[in-house]
Image (cartoon, rainbow, N blue to C red):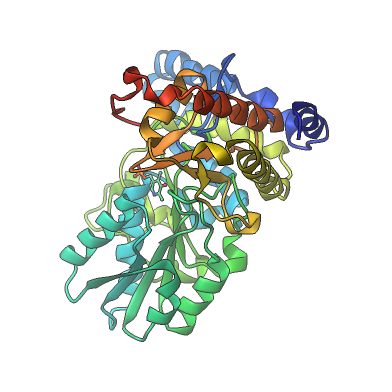
Length: 409
Ligand SMILES: *Cc1c(COP(=O)(O)O)cnc(C)c1O
């Protein structure tokens, strides 16, 4: 395909108007929406207003007058329709790692007679550290780690919890969450999903999956800003039984009664713990407004179309230059991400960043490209491959200034 073909696809893209809400710097192709989503000017305005007016002038009155006290619930109401949940099933708080800790402990306690927490060896390292920490903390608990395609076979009657990430952070491989949840249930286990690379990128329907618990990140495809609060989903059918291991006052049924004893709050709100981070929540709340006008069914469609175009162009133009597609080739089996394997991935990634193509490096040899469906255009995909073609043809990665490792990517 020539560049004109990609431009033509942009003209008929039903999600094209959403890009207007974002500010993408000139000369930048932001293909790391799976790492840190792009900023919307509306978020900047909102944060400025919260700081200057609500905090600066309103001071403590803003807990009521500016709606700070109900901001976690307001943000939960915006996330719920994106994941196929009811508002009361979603709590917005803390980081994904902390929420996963709360979810896995709570899930483990739903199955007190079973000792195994099952996860897979491709799961995100933080998730695996958290799970190992849970097993250290709880009596009679053991973590079993298997390859992703061995999970179903290991779902025996000692498994209390299955926890996996829906879209693999390295390869972009998409798990069949509905099928694995059903398999967990057939074995008598509870499933906890990490949706960090899913929400806002691929089809997520927790109601349809009969999901038990889930967590996810909001600073990737939801563009909530660096370190934006995460969310925890707990299915309504479990609410009466679920307890958060962090019984903080904001998860209490009546935080401002200052009673002596803890009583869990309603629904997923019991997973709130401490005072909500109002500045971050306000940024996230403003960032999520753009989804009100998005036909959510278009999102997985565009993710597949963008990633398919990228794969086709990489095959066509970069195949002879030492680059290999390291993500599933069947569009339905991957998230909004394509990983490329290249021996000198680090230097090539830094050369690409300098040329305006923002992608992540995942050691030892992976370059990861995320295609945020709300603001990445088909022409950006074409242009990114064109830049990579030039860098590879010129052997740009061999320049010594690209040999220094990055601190964060
Ligand atoms: C990004 C990501 C997280 C983020 O965890 P934090 O605790 O919010 O930093 C967690 N899990 C997965 C799978 C991720 O990709």
